[in-house]
Length: 212
Image (cartoon, rainbow, N blue to C red):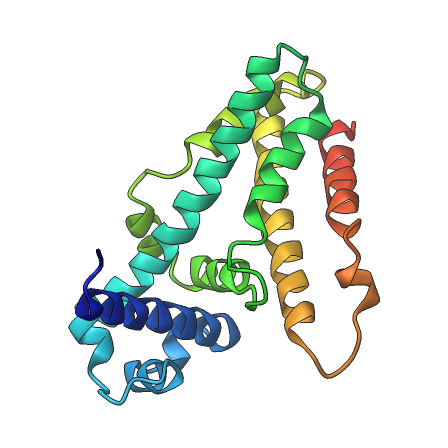
């Protein structure tokens, strides 16, 4: 049985994470103070971030790892299922496993922020981003890359690597743009709200891989 104190502390931690993620996605980590995070999370104690995480940097690391681990687990599970089926993986299958696990990372009804946060943070604090990952939580992506290279036989290996870099940048920017548009409730965003938009994203990534 979970004690009330433990549940309350866990709730506070999750509230701080949600508040920080949203603020970081909107303004970048340098534009947000720990006091603002605490206030947005409904914490009266302005030192809540330090109390629960140690520092703002430690909170950022926790957010990066939470999302990266979830995405990685999803990718590996999807790859395991497809490989176990005995069916030949198509290029669409592989790219779908790169795309779909990167969305719907929050409980239903909550605003998606992870891709906006991670794209902005990795551009402005690349070294800290890589340090937070610590060379982990990307085994699923590496497995996808092995399959992707099998569809790039028409390209020399150096060009294959360039295409992979393009795909990573393209994926991050499109998913971040999608999150930003869906978070804007001031008007409708019919393009970005269509379920088929992710399928179209996969199709355009296929074109990048197959381009001569």
